[in-house]
Image 1 (cartoon, one colour):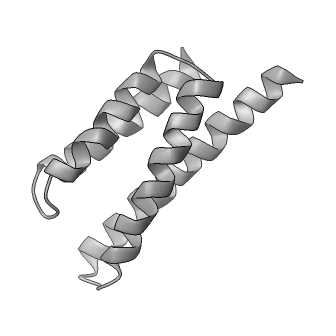
Image 2 (cartoon, one colour; image 1 turned 90 degrees about the vertical axis):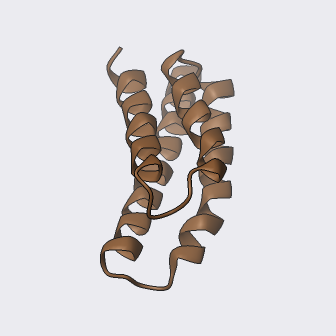
Length: 98
């Protein structure tokens, strides 16, 4: 039962990250003004990532948390913002496959 709970926590963290990436990408590509929702969701995504790190520990999740921690310094519309999203996505992919 505990194993399934860990997978659920990791699943929620992964899906919230993916949803927020899609929201940010849509805001940027369509030049929409709902980017504030994307930035507000960041807090929830960070909380979910920390929960994943604590309850479903995998070393790759450290990569996710590090990328999320660096986001406040990466301004939107710069190369750093999508690069950090890619690093976070890589961390989740590694957590699921390794």
